[in-house]
Image (cartoon, rainbow over all chains, first blue to last red; front, side):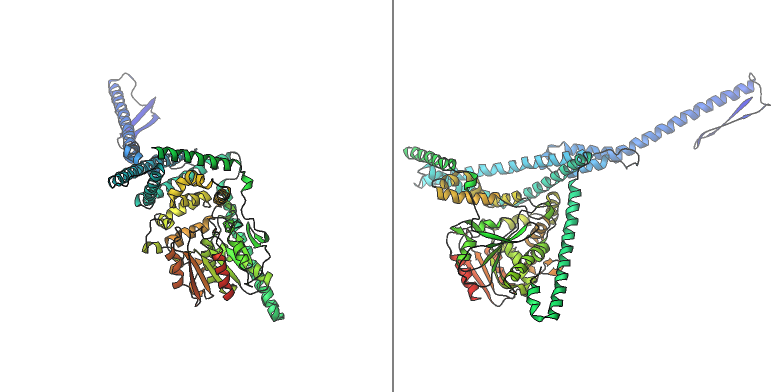
Length: 271
Length: 356
């Protein structure tokens, strides 16, 4: 007969051992029935406990994911869709934050989840947002110039020195716009925007380069990074050649000087 | 009302005149750098030319002209009657010109060390060898002036006389005398962080010529806005003026890329950190000590230069070690003084050289 021994250990889970025991009570015996009932109940309890443990583990995982990633991702997403973010531009850091939040450790034999498209999107969005911002900053400048022009026309008219011809008006307008633009181009506001535009343009170009490099690898063509590496090596070699030429020239010079002092002038000219 | 209509009709007539003049011209009609020259030496896309004109010599030691890398040297030979190099030859100099060429991505790692100690030094050596002389006259313009100054400091024995034209030395001098129309490049560069410049170079490799063009457009926004309407209409009223305009346009359109590593030094170490003036610039591991510039120096600057503040040029006086330092203020714009019809600048340089 098969005897099943079940030990319950709440901490370690269900442990089942089985063995053949010829002296065990036959089925139908009251004591045996009670024992089986107890075993059944025990098994049910164990199963429930195991299920509880599993759900608890999942709940913990969900909690960690929510706290470690969900909250951060939610915050990032809410900032991403906030109108202020679009107005201010510079999505790069925000989307990088999102990419970091969603990234997982790399596994050797599992294809890596490629989130680099986020970077390209970020760079594009940044550039568009900053160009819009540039427009929004420069438009009031033209309005201001227009107001200055109108004020100047009015002042001149009041002084009896009104603008007499379209040409004169054009000269006046050009003078006002010229000054307004130069002042704007030297302002801190413009400098800050220029700086951000430069960063966004450079970042956009770098991201495009990454896309291009993926394409180049696909078609087995040299990438920009590989070419840059070749250029660096060429440059280093050119410098080395130049250095060797100079050393050779110096050697020839010293040799010529020791042999015939009048030759020194000629050799000094060698490159 | 009538005056306005008359003016409008006149404008329409002027536009038609300009359109008519333009319709007669093709791209090949607009030529620059027509003064005869011969190629003397070439290294990796950089070329040494000699202006091949027979003329009496007042100055026996040849002059090597080094222009900036942000534009082509041929602005110095825009047309026969507006040619700086031709004027120098006619004033009695034997003139060589360095052409920095059109740097490609392969040149992106060229820094000041390469420009000064490789290319410039090799060209100086070629001229010395050709003429059998120990030193030459070096004439640098704008950025080419800075490179010439560095060369003179590092190779003083190879330079007999140094002439600098609209050359910045103190890159922060504009702060002492702020003018709305001057020093935009200084303000713009100081508004960036060193990391911004690194990022730009990382992304671009070389600085595209178009970036330089945009910078110059921002310096003179009004001129940029009106160039192809008011200015072109005005220039189009007669062929000669139009040709002048178009030659300058041809030169402007030919903006070479700037080698990235040199641009990094130019913007960070000079514009931002002012290392040349502070005596902290290091090229190829050697400190550029301007007190080593002991040969005679002629420093030419313009009070109305909108790109290089006159104080930035005049600061040279306090830094060079030369006991024979002369300043020559000239009137005109940064490029204007080089493309002027007047031969005064060339004559002044030749006269000074003949005396030294």
